Amino acid sequence: MAKYIKILVLILTLSACGQNVTEMNTPENANEKFAEFIAKKKFVAENYYPGIADEKMRPIFTEKINSIASDFKSVAESENPTDKKYQEKIGIGLSRFADVYLELDTEDRERVCTYIEELMDIVGLESSNGQLNKFMYVFDPNELTNKN
Image 1 (cartoon, rainbow, N blue to C red):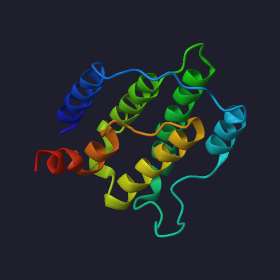
Image 2: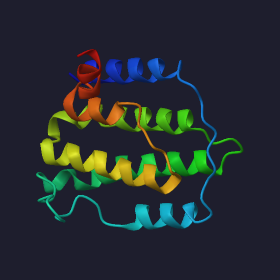
Image 3: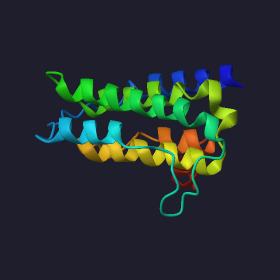
Image 4: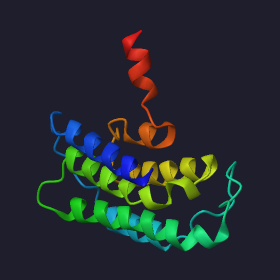
């Protein structure tokens, strides 16, 4: 199963290569926001999220999310941050969950997506290019509505 998820993420990343590239301006307080994001405790009960299903997985999931944050930070600090570069980092980050994907219940997958959306908000990235939907649902529901 993990092999298929890695292949899916690779295909998604490659399909994103044909997209138009939009140069992005990094907000002045991005480094501070990345530091706050990395420092906060993750996968705890909040709002409608009940907390991580398997407590022993918290440090593993947290490390994977913080790696995505570090990847975003490196793009933000680069000379030419673009939406495509951030989307590539999302694909890479989601592929890091391939080895534990079966350990993620629905709420935990939603929480992973919410954390990535928080990172997207920090840099002003408007779209994951369908990657979050594909991670969550194994397909992009928007593709179905566009065909109808």
